[in-house]
Amino acid sequence: MDRNATLTTITTLAEQLCDPRHHVERIPYWDTNRNRKYREWRTTQPGLLAQLHEAAVEPADARNDPGPRSVPGSRPPLALEALSTHMAITAYAAHWCWSLKIDQRDTVEANIRALVGKAPTLDDDALTALASEMRRWTHWAAVASRWVAPPFEPHVPCPACQAVGKLRVNLRAQIAHCRGCQNTWAADDGSIFHLGEYIQAHANNRQAA
Image 1 (cartoon, one colour):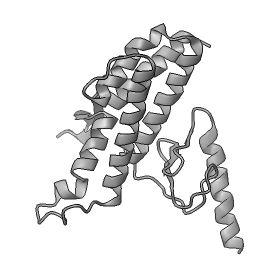
Image 2 (cartoon, rainbow, N blue to C red; image 1 turned 45 degrees about the horizontal axis):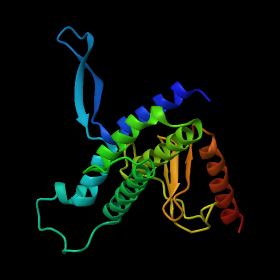
Image 3 (tube, rainbow, N blue to C red; image 1 turned 120 degrees about the vertical axis):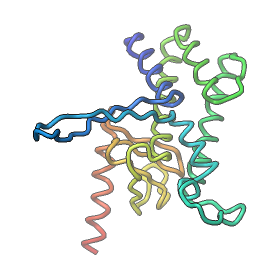
Image 4 (tube, one colour; image 1 turned 135 degrees about the vertical axis):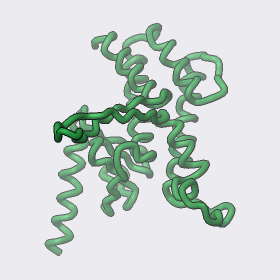
């Protein structure tokens, strides 16, 4: 294995989970002489874990709706999904810190940053496992927070656990995971394409029936 590449992967994934992202979009416009020019629109978006927390604590509909709040105790599916995903990542990060004898921090982000600091001291097997685990957390968070686009929710059994209606597929980000068994599929290992073929096969079978 390439340890430097794996360490870079772990650092990059931690940044996506924990740190704000700065986005620059070039917007075209025409000046008074009808020349095409561009202005930059700069925004800062929270890290994926912060987005999950915001969605769980105060769903987007509630933030945008000036009217009465919903009945206490009731939450839309997105809020519950964001909450459960945030709790799962928090628990897994805490377990990793415990297993590596790292003192627990106050937040999940701080625990993940502590894991990044510990990573260079790990042996190859543990380093590979940590990278895989953090990749899975990032996939979960990207899907549940609707980072790029609302997820596609195919009504087919999960190929891993057979639970129906649990798959969440972020089409633009090319990542997916199952809300039942927590398996993930992504473009970097080619698994998302096999999942796509599986979903298409089920759709074809329904049409034939």
